[in-house]
Image 1: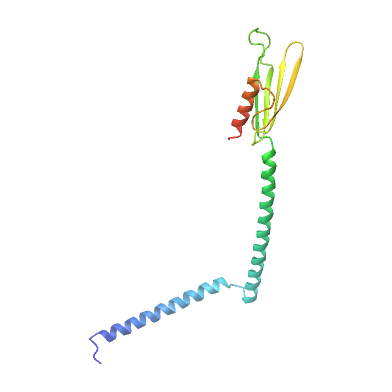
Image 2: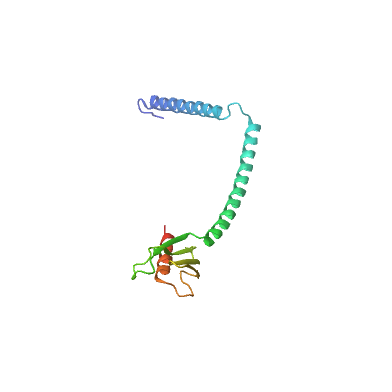
Length: 159
């Protein structure tokens, strides 16, 4: 077999380089494994893995409980009053009597269900009215101020 000049030396050099690379890799791997297992043995690592697996199961159970809790919170939030607005007005604009002592206030949830309260103030007496609200409307006739307070309460829900 005829080998070209220097080919044998090149092959020997490549072999030495490969052997050095393998030795370096093994030393590096050994160093990393020693750092990983520092002060531990196989039994300790198994205990750690089992402990971590039980922690993961507990976290999964906790997550299910939190999801269930959040569902109930969302259901309660749908029913809670979140849109509140008040409009003050003077029912006697034309006569010049009184001031903006009268008001209409609306309290609604996200679905627009709730109540609107209005008060008419005069020197002699105060009248208070309450009207149920469903889907931002009432089965009773609403004054302009009551309609305005419902619209303002609806706008606050978009925040």
